[in-house]
Image (cartoon, rainbow, N blue to C red):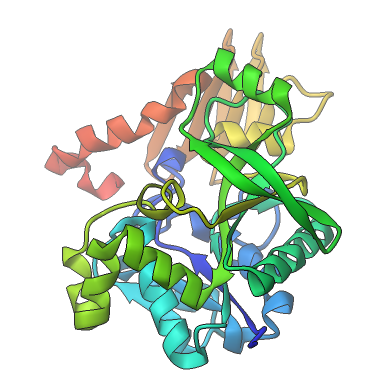
Length: 354
């Protein structure tokens, strides 16, 4: 069996909930949000390179408008390993197309992993051990392996995976058949999930053999895989827009979960900055020159170090100054940033702000 591992970075997202720092010409995956010198995309490639055995086995799928930015951020990535979507069709189409391309080149036993470009991972060593377990499971069984994050608080912002029967241990990590996937729960349901010890957060990271996932797509998502097999990527803009969770993971009987804890955040919106960078001796998270009076629980960011942000009497807000835009939003309403962007799109005065 071919045990080569081919990590694929999903780098086509817009990161709209990090607007105005994340924009069409500079989406979230091109940014550094943890104070390091490496962007989220570069950090993702860094942690996968050793596991891949070098650049020749690392793949990226992205959208046409930001493909050049990906090339600039990852100059060592082989041209043939960069797949460019002519139009974004969500993760099911991305997984199907990339898996087909890797299977053509390396065969059905090639082990593939899919990883979002914009996640934060704290412990690289445990992450590598987890992937070794996932690869071992995928090599030994017809399995679609998902990495489940052991929850440490009752999040209402993540989907959950309920584990079923234990099937054994791989690289000393227990693996379970997936009993069910659930959508983002309300607070009470999330607390119940946490108390049972049977639920993990859905990280959106998957590992499987090429032949296994393609056969499952033929069974559960023929409307996506068959046009690609018959017509190639030219048909891509006509494919249904579906997530891999909806198109496959919620339907397949071959889903397995490895519940793990390596320090993880999907960096879904500005509140993630507080989870990453909050210091006990400061009532606020400051990535700017900030002078505050009676201000607490604020996240303050400015891309220009010469900009000074002054606040009085504010609590639990996000303030972001980037180029020609200032955003002020309550922390519990950051999900609504996408609604503001829809409003801006309708007015020609603001198209340059997107």
